[in-house]
Length: 226
Image (cartoon, rainbow, N blue to C red; front, side, top):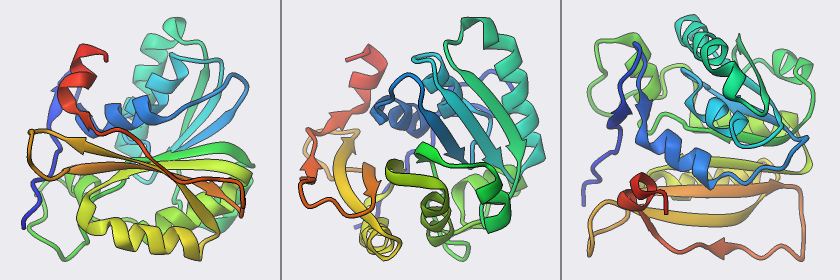
């Protein structure tokens, strides 16, 4: 059964609009004041800025796309007075271990990854959109590996993906030393399959950690603030 991909824009201000799945992921992540958080593939900064508005945290956002980092930095400077936390956005390749380890250790890592493999489907003509939807500049394996490099033991990795890629995602989490801790399915229509899943994993082994399947969520709940 084909899966319809959710990538609609609900905020259209600026050249790089915020996507629904970014807001879902930001709402899914539970943060505490004082934490260091890394946003992998930060894009225009939607997730990082949403989290910085909620708590006094330190957030680093990285992306290989300089245009995206410049847009994220502009949005941060525009809204900085409204923020509780601090954000820094810088260009960088998550596949470069030396670069990643220079960032230091983090309490949490978040990522809204590209959903399609590079050879799957038609690439958008815009290279920025192509990299956001297809694994052009990084793969799911690259993302999980990078999260493992910079998370402290017991740190939390949260991301969103489509159901057809979940078996691969779970295998990679296990291979890179993560323990799956929570899944929340996302629906757009009643009586139909979930179109997205929010995933949380913890770095390291913890025998007392029980994996939770959270109540399903619909997009209307996000828009209504419930």
